[in-house]
Amino acid sequence: MKDLFFVRRRGETSRITQSLAVQSDGIKYRLQYLVLDRTNPTKAERASGAKEERIEVLNQEFFLNVGDFIRVSDFPLPKLTREFIRFLKGSQEHGSES
Image 1 (tube, rainbow, N blue to C red):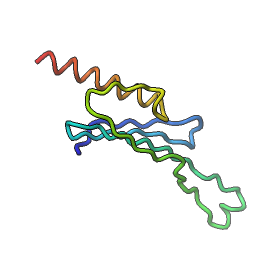
Image 2 (image 1 turned 90 degrees about the horizontal axis):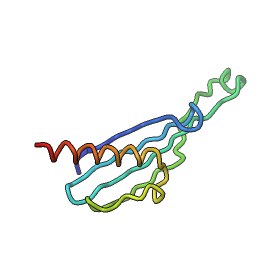
Image 3 (image 1 turned 45 degrees about the horizontal axis):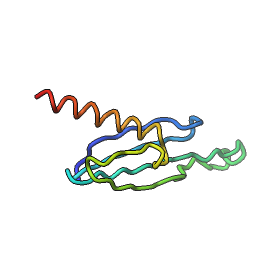
Image 4 (image 1 turned 120 degrees about the vertical axis):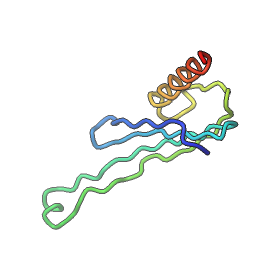
């Protein structure tokens, strides 16, 4: 599968990162949603050498046929899904101009 689209943004707090990576083989799309958070060690824990760590909160994959209707509410991160839909619409418009 070929990388087609990627978007990353902050979540509700600056410690959370949300991303959507989309690959395609021309027949299907593979949408991978990933949400990462970070631990927040106390001053005492930091003094003893503790560091922030990434925690995987969500890691889900979805497979769709190219051309299928994409319903935003069917996916875990609607804002990122909308960005992918806008990308697809823009790609189709540019493809029809040539």
